[in-house]
Amino acid sequence: MCGIVGYTGPRQASRILVEGLKRLEYRGYDSAGIAVPKDATQDEGKTLVVIKKKGKIAELRKAVPKDLPGNFGIGHTRWATHGGVTDANAHPHVDSSGKIAIVHNGIIENYIPLKEMLEKEGAIFRSETDSEVIAHLVAYHYDGDLETALKAALRHLKGTYGIAAVHADEPGRIVGARNGSPLVLGVGDGEMLLASDVTALLTYTTSVVYLNDGEVVSMTPTEFRISDRDDRAVDPEIDLVTWKLDAIEKGGFSTYMEKEIFEQPESIERALTGRMDFEYCSAKLGGLDMSKKELHAIERIRVIAAGTSWHAGLVGCQLMESVARLPGQAELASELRYRNPVVEPNSLYIAASQSGETADTLYAMREIQRRGGSVLGICNVVGSTIARESDGGIYVHSGPEIAVASTKAFTSQLAAFYLLTLSLARLHDMSHHEGERFLTDLKAIPAAVRRSLLLRDSIQEIAKRYARFGDFLFLGRGLLYPIALEGALKLKEISYIHAEGYASGEIKHGPIALISPDTPSVFLVPNDHLREKTISNMKEIKARGGPIIALAEEGDELVASIADDYIPLPKVDTRFQPFVMMPPLQLFAYFCALELGRDIDQPRNLAKSVTVE
Ligand code: AGP
Image 1: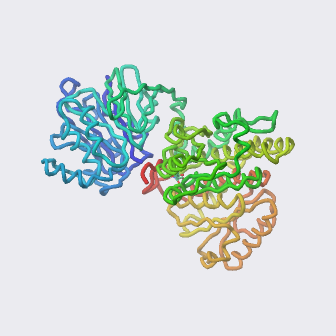
Image 2: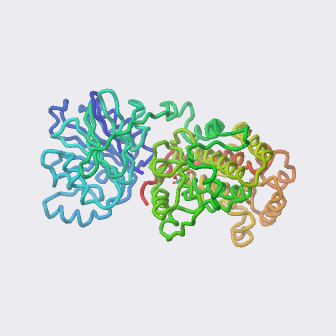
Image 3: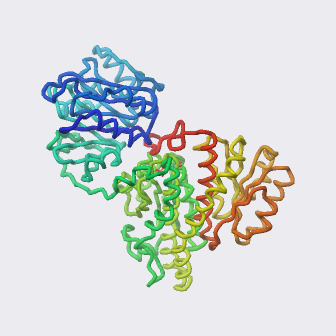
């Protein structure tokens, strides 16, 4: 949610800032801006040029002169919270003198009294944002040293922030601070960068330092210093990013989402690699950091997550119950945090989050930990806050996911839940032989997913015919119920078509009233004892004139004869059907959105990582 980038070094800062913002655009894309020194050299940089534009980074790019001099500066891509989407509300914000510029990610909760206080002191505000108070507060405290002034300003702030600040009189210096919104420092050769996430740094360096909450960094092209707010020095830990630059390019696809959908065979494979233990027919999950005894003592599973990750958790919990015989419950993090939750002993809490930065999930995790619970993270982004603050975990290794709608991270999260289930099941009821069968089926999943992606053209053809409908129901049972929820979410997110996910057995309890020739139902038909029940539900819809798209195992003639459109899926064991159902649903949403001319990678109103509550 909002992206920050900073650069200091020998190169033209404006170019690097705009390029970095383009990489971060998925974090927020309603407006963007940069601030660089006005003069050609750092020595002469006594004033700042601030360029801000409503709209996508492309608008900012057009507004930034190609030859804009200056080799340090900060930039921001915004997802509005306080104040509408206007040029004035875009960041950077400057103090009244125009010498100090700041960019901010997060929310300053007490900005109104601060603004009143600063206005009395003569500060002139130019925006409706909460963030602008930071620039004026820094100015209020400034006495020749930006780091000291920012630290003093932080003492006033209540809320969350990732901040980067520059002062025209301190050429080459960028000061950053973190509290609840991620910031990562890129350590280059004679240059330094600062960003909300590593995708903005990768072109220049793979050596990074993740800032922790409460830390402040002061950097010049050749050195950096990290300290806490009380000025105690912090020993930096330099990490090496393993993501490659081509992983954040589109690689020949027209959108990131299409690329990420088609990467799933490989991304699932990566989630499984090195973790399938055929000797003991279990899973090797070193990152859990728990002994066999501790794992054996677990009596129930609680997943905390949001959105797509919550759907993965719902699948994971059902699987835990049926395969590992452990009761499981997936909870919406935004609900759990404010519910005064009972943290039971012998419960394993799992925070599932692609980005590892979702505020709701992070705060719920901290609440559980504060009450003495242990929380594992199932995350994609290495070094993310949830990954670092959890008590152990599983990285899903799906590679960078840039499209706002999550696809490959979801199926990789599923893979992690399947591995964890297997490992717990093998500590309880599951025999060696059953474990072997489970592992063999799991190993075959990447190939089955590859086959399900071959349905691309037929799904596109179906999507073309359905894209003009205004309402959809997605219906599934058992493990396919969360997949129905996820299918509906994908369609909503990127096509803006209204879609509801329901348990098929529930439609007669209300939603069937919606059925008409204008409301198609997408049925996810399981290949087990629930198949016949699902077919009965299909007939109920058919009898009321509702169009049906059915996803069912290949060769299911009965389903094919009832449905208006039938999508035949590769045969896999029932327990693994979520893996082969999901890619066709993602493709269906994708092609509906394409047909409607939507902005698929950056749908309206959304942001990739939701770092505000
Ligand atoms: C997924 O398509 C959505 N963009 C959204 O629901 C997302 O899954 C949710 O915000 C949670 O994100 P996380 O996995 O990064 O925590």
